[in-house]
Each structure stands twice: as C-alpha cells, then as structure tokens.
Image (cartoon, rainbow, N blue to C red; front, side, top):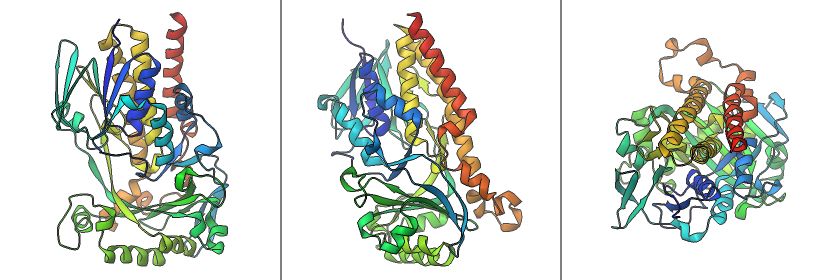
Length: 425
C-alpha cells in the first residue's frame, strides 16, 4: 500500500518538527526550503519548554544538558545598575541553530530539498499539486505551510491575512563568552537580565556558543532590546547608505553605521551600565520589526497552516518554537486518530490549534502593550502603559508554558484526548 504523502513548504524549525512527526506515523514526507543552503547560522536565542521536549523525544532528538543553558536568576536592573527584582527561573535558553541542527540531522537527506521556492499549487480529488519556481512539481495528499510570517501558502489561501506591525523593533546581537571582560562576565553572564526604562524593554541571556557549545567559557550571550519605532521611521531604518529602502527589513551588513551608533548612545542613556557595556561589545547588532498575525482558519481543503504561517506572537511569550511543535503534534495526532478521514482530522486540528494560537497572540499583545503604546501621545496612554507593573511584567514575559495555566490546560486536555483515542484503538 502506498504511503500517504505530506508536502511541507518551509524547512525551518516548524517544518522540521512536522516532517519528523509525519515520518513517525508512517507518512512519506518531503520538505521544500526556498534557501539554497543550510540554515544553521540563522536565528538567535530561543526559549525551550517542557512540552517542546516531549515532542523532541517523540522524534528521537536527545533531550539533555547540551540543548541549552539555564541562567541562575532572572534579574531586573534600574538605569543606575541597582537590582530591582531578582528570582530564580529554571527555563532552558538555547539558540536557533542548536535546535535546527538536532531536527535536521534526524531527517533523512532525501526528504529535504533546498532551493525550492513555491510558486503556486492546486487541489483536486483529495490531492495537492505544488509547483516551484525552478519548474519542478510535487504531488501529495496534504500541503503543509510551515513557511513563516511571509507564508506563500497563506498568501494563496488567505490573501487578506497580513502581518500587523506592533509599533516597535527588536535590536538583537550576540557576543561570545570569551570576548566579555571579566567584570562584565561576572555581573551578567549567569543571569537573564532585564531593563525596563519607560518605553523600552531589554533582555539578555546566555545561550550555546559557536558550534552549539554549552561548556563554560565557550558559550555566548544574547541580546533582545525592544524599542518603539513608527512605521515611517522603520522605513528610514531599513534604508541603506545609498538611499535604497529595503521595505520593512534590511540585511545586517546594510544597516547604516550611524544608526548603530545612535542605538549604542541611547543604551548609555537609558539602560543599566552593565547592559550598555554589553551592547557596546556586540560586533554585529541587527534589528527586526515586531509583528503579530492570526489566521481565521488554518485549513482550506488539503492545505494546512502551522507555526508562524498560522499565528505569529510577539517574542515576549517565548513560545514560537513550542507553538510550532504543538501545531505539528496536534496535526499528526488527529491524522493518526482519524484513519482514512483526512478532512475530519484537519477539522479537529483547525479547531484546537486556532484556540491555542489565539490565546498565545493575545497574551503576547498584553505583555507588549506598553511598548506599542509609545507611539501614542503621552497624554493618551493609560497608567499601565506608562508604568507597567514590574513584578507582573517580570513573571509574565518569557514565562514557561507550565506557568500559564490558561494555555497549559489546552495542551493537557488535547494530549489527554489523543492518548485516550490511541488506547481505544
């Protein structure tokens, strides 16, 4: 009997999670990635959750201390460097490349295809035909859009659904542990540090270093600094030295040097001295505009959206990879339980993961509300937008899924239903 086939568009973390889970339930899976080479060097720091570890174990990825680094504390400094809040939080912090490498190595090479840009696709008789820019085609029983915030799959089935700019950017950067001065290392490296001056939010934390090394002395330290920027000013930030605007994003090497100098000068004015010192030492800072997005449906025929193609939550919740993993897990569990009825499985997936995705996006918007509000006149901002509760913000931002009962309950209930159906068969 011929295996059912899933065509997965997007070979980043979400696509790899889905591919490995599909293989685990006996499907033939083919992954199509538009980039022409390996993606390991892309991305920055990410947070890992216990629920993500569960999915790793299902697909054969080893879960051990090499996956990431656990800071000894979560610490908030005031602009003078005084500790305002400090407590322990045992969340594992990793790097995008470390997770990518584990998932990519688990998938056979013949199942992954680089240099494949989806042009369009058509559906007929329970089959999907995908066409790529190089002239090649692929046919399968299911097309999974795991192609991120600018999803080509979503643009075909839900053309009106577009990312929404949140009104701020995130400056990012990373520095090797060995490059930090002894004083700076002693002050911050073992901590997840937070600075929360008015209208800003900065977080720094340790992650695996080059070659995904987690040995002391070989790790790295990651920066995420949220800064309000109007849409008009965003276009200026994305304009290179020749005057060419690259839209709403720009390659790091094309960022104008004076913009980086301005960013570092602002850090010296508003952030704790140790945080500003760290930013001074980052060799290649870059930024990304912050968006969110939610889809009204995740399924159209045999085309399915998952991960950031379906819902994009601002990074404050630290659940991007976990959400993609739970999407993929739900999809394959529904397909396993529904037997030959793919339509029934997709309906179950759509209902369950839309509720979860909407909850994650709403939570991220709530956490980032004071940042988004900075583009309003000051007199129109609420007290909470002007002065977010420090303790509440510290515990809410980057919390593990286990610390968010309203979302955790959805996952626990769904997994329990899936387990009951497996036992029944």
